[in-house]
Image (cartoon, rainbow, N blue to C red):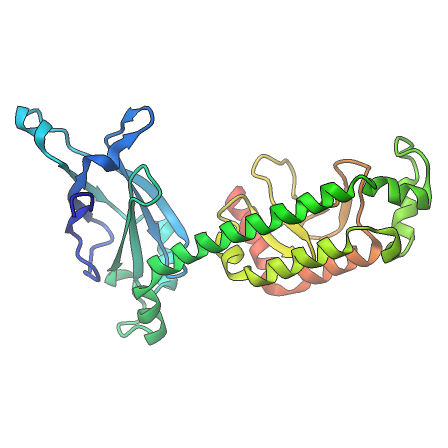
Length: 312
């Protein structure tokens, strides 16, 4: 095909050297077109056996000066790369099986090349499940991207319903139960913390929270794939999202609930509520206990810890 990229090396499942990875081929000129003109680069991602990118870069496309080159439909690209020591753990966990993803400037312009880095394969004979999974990394990534699109569309629809219901403003419903002025911040959070969770009749977004939880369960694999490498999201629970911001100072993470406009700060590694970014929405005592229990799970705590290590 005229618009298909042609790879010279590496070939699929070729064993390559971690210290000298040579990638070359011919790329259609259409892959270099952008709305601003021509960009003489193709993009390259290294992904592990779970389809997560652990290193990203680009390869320059050669621009020959010969006048005949303007009649060519494809141009040559060539690059030499080395696997750095900080990426070795991803490859070892993948038993040496990684995938190179080449991309042009349009979403549909992509190619997946499964390769083997034998020097970083701790098992000379890899697990059969790893081998089978390696064959389908590209399909898996494309499916996860479709799932995330469906998730975001579903979440947007839920948010629209919340906004429609906000004709009965959520904060106003909660105000009727406790106080008439949210500007009186002294003591208001203490009252909320000391009280039990609001009764369902006092909270109009129960159905939307339930749908959001179901949506997260349906697309949990794609959300996990998106994971901490995309924005510092380390977990989700009952509509809450746990996020570490790269520009934050101090050891704390944020507990967010988009529908209820909750933004709470929790300490790390203690996992205790510090304060709220705003005083207009809060977390009930039972919800706080659920969050603490969530991070008592060693796997969940480890993901949070790794995100702080990546940030430091």
